Length: 304
Image (cartoon, rainbow, N blue to C red; front, side, top):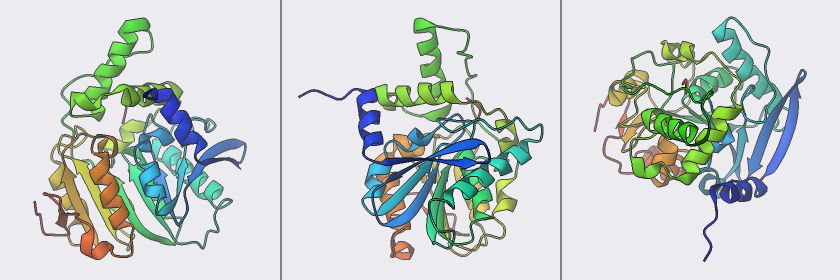
């Protein structure tokens, strides 16, 4: 039996959905649609594209119509004009998503939404403009401002080539995105390299500041926060998750085995949790019996 190469697997996944290019002014924004059911938007992280969700799209599309964009200045979407104000640039990204998604789905439609890393900040900004969000999930969100614990410096790959460049990508993947080397497989490396090469956005340092807490202050619908226990973008993931949840009814959190790219490294558990969280029975199964899952107040349990 022939094992599909990473490129073949990505091509197969892409062909299983539909691709839409919608313009925000003169900038094309690419969206992909998979499956059927209630709408679920997945927003990728910095230096990424829709493939940050490569292990999650199919399982989630069994129950949902999954919509996955490429953020402006990343992936196949067009490039935004550089803005000296990094917050204005993030707001422009969110505005571009809201405006283009409104051409694909009626703005009155109730949706669910999940964001990863930088995508967590964009998701919070998106929620300020799309008023019919039922539930939200933020995975390894940036913008918490509670410090990082990354101990290995990233290697600049742009002036390297051949084996040296490949080694740099693998080093960076393990330094930032993953905890277990066994998870740095050919697919992870293919996605990581491709998304880094395609990124034209510079401005991720703002997301190391404390901004997402205030962005979510007026959001009243339930939120699930998921972190990897080895996520180097947060000093103490459980404390960050508890801080973002504390005192707010309907906010839950879980810390799972894995690193920053938790929906790749621990895909089966994350998929189960998200399917449960975005189901009609979320209140009774959001923790999915994962050690470390907590609820508001209980305390149980970017650049690349």
